[in-house]
Length: 419
Image (spheres, rainbow, N blue to C red):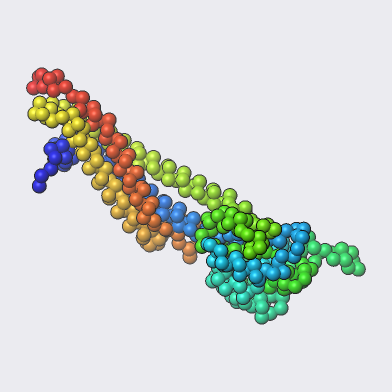
């Protein structure tokens, strides 16, 4: 098969067995370094993507993406018509689900412990797609409608309070007080545990659910007590776009300008920013491994250039241009880089796809003894693999430029003078 002379010679040099042992040693370890760097990047980025995805699913599956609230001093009781407003919101772009609720800080007390929680009053009929409903260990959210003054809580909270299904707990609202013969005391009421969930996130020990009408009675509100609507989007990161569209909407068709609108970033933004920063730093640090390995190619090629001075001079006297010399050594360096990138990507993808099986085979539990049943979340994205491969190839190419151009500066007359 016809090949350009520069490519032919470069490939011959890369396959040559007659190179000095030290040069072969450096070339081998530069290839292995690229292999390990690329594989490590693919594995770590896949795990970080998995953790980010789990955070989005477990935290943003419960935390509303957008909250529309009634102002503290409203001129009109807009949420009397929250049912109509909900239907209008469901017609907007990116909004998949709208559920009504009320919320308040509260204390929950059992016979052995006391814990601060966020109380949410919900209407179970609107919560069929709630992630809590899909992670119930005992009971269901619908039990809030079937039994008066029923409560649903997370397993972590139930363990702290040492309670189980059917037990009674006391809800106390320290910010709401009433006058009694004994003086002013906080509003409180006994509730029966009708369900326990386990989402696997921080909400398991910080949030409890009751029916909105019983929550309204506890808060001394009229009717169902609904004063907020939470919006779940097709993608939580579209929250700012949705808010902008709602605020720009015609007030006659969608009266959101008179309401308070907040997003999940106000409460959870710092956490996701920290995860994103950690992901970028891991990417940077592991990229340095690839960079160091590629620059080992510089050392190997420089020594090859010194070793091949006579052959370079002969090629030049036979009419090979300076650019042809450059292409020879770029080809030789890129072959080593391609081997490392190709094998690294294969090993990286295979290990990422079978990471939990490999950890189980070797008896390793990275999450610790408290998470024996859980596995590492892994999300392998083709775009990340493509970026890693291209970045490694670009760094390899840049590493070949200096020795290649140094080789092209060889003066045949000086090199061949003593031949």
